Image (cartoon, rainbow over all chains, first blue to last red; front, side, top):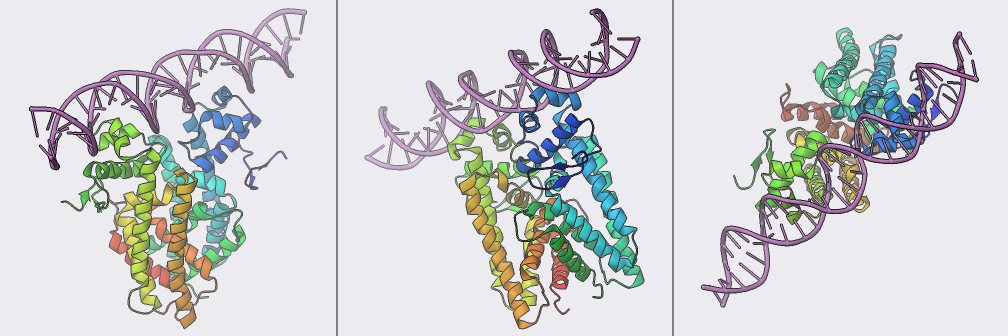
Length: 208
Length: 208
DNA sequence: AGGCACACTAAGCGGCCGCTCACCTTCGGC
DNA sequence: GCCGAAGGTGAGCGGCCGCTTAGTGTGCCT
């Protein structure tokens, strides 16, 4: 298994852009620890221990604990943005592309809940510069979804009185999946994605 | 102002069930600190300092820092449940009562964002017994919303293929308001409440 | 074989953490 | 006027925190 890691939650995490191997192991360990206990409650000794290394080893690959969070957050936001861009640039009308965007975005938040939780809920733990960088990515995420909704409203496919507010609500709905989704629960990521795509189409007044 | 406190965020917080006065001041300080920085990143010295007291004063009124969080979480959940029960037991058909429930629940999460943030996002910091107690309250919250949706589906007012999933989504949408709502932003809690009530009625397929 | 860059560890430093304790004030009841 | 209860403080304890440093093992280049 060279390009993927099986984590405790049973998710497949492709962190292959992180090298060398020890740096990736530390980063995967940090994702799990941050997701379980939160950034501030996680100690560098815990991260190193999960990666099977001594506490000092962390500082060979990362300057600080915050840099670890920054790298995780950056990679996660890049991935989330990539998912939305792929759906937004796909084939079909606005209805089809909005449904694709929501279902794939939700599948990521549910299937990779561990990563998504860190990415979406630990933003405040970053310093000012890192936070500003991530907030810029979030604005791009917002713009992708808003673009599809605006287009559907323009063509008459959708009935949306408040484009900005509806965009906010759609993203909020998807992101919050990372908070409540339970891997051992009754629903698969695919089922939640399909349900949410249907609910969002209702929200924008798309014809069934 | 004996029954309400004006906090830094400009919100009115009625913590009058907490006595004596010093205990209430400490609790309000803890709510602000937990909301801003998170439970684990908040120190007891910070809480006491905000309340204008020495660090040791906290332990006259609360056994531990966790007891403070427990009290906040309990009071907040009681209030949230009260809001939903009032709306669910109100007059009108299911459409009217669901709109009331969503708009008042959202107004609380937006207008009392500081409290709601702590209540909704710091659950994991509680110990097993306290968490179990809070989870029981959350099940009651879920039951109230599900009850309205089930009734609307039974009378034919709503078109809801998946009652449990839709309930989950409606609550998720409302709760996440506490994460993104900005007091200095362009929308008032009332506006968000009205927007969300409309979006939720669309989600359940209620006639306009 | 020698040298040296690299990855890693054991030990520990300074500092802040949650929390405690000995002591001090204020105040109502008799 | 005395007392005990209640509410407060300053100092500090034991411990864990993020992070550093000195030293060790390993493998590649010459």
